[in-house]
Amino acid sequence: MPNIQPLLEKIQALPVERIAEIEDFVEFIAAREQERSLTRAAGAVSAPAFAAIWNNPEDDAYDAL
Image 1 (cartoon, helix red, strand yellow):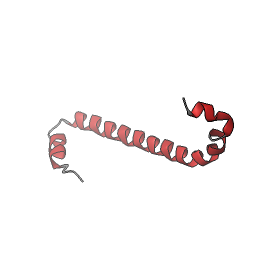
Image 2 (spheres, helix red, strand yellow):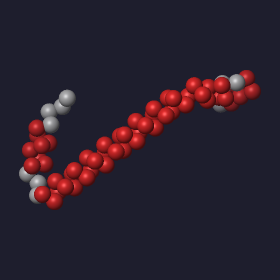
Image 3 (cartoon, helix red, strand yellow):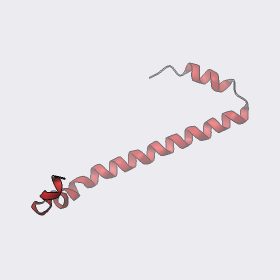
Image 4 (cartoon, rainbow, N blue to C red):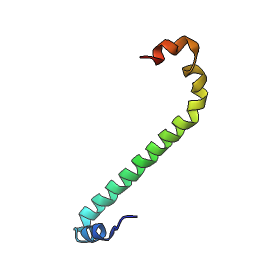
């Protein structure tokens, strides 16, 4: 894990209203990362179900494109 002490010191030096903005931004980043994680998981789970549709002799010509 990276050393976060310099970042914490910078945050602590800010006015209270700026700290609230940072907290909002961190929450936004965390929510976005959770959404991306869910999207990747859904894609991984659905890939086997679509494999029979995607991998078929009729569509082999499209695979070469």
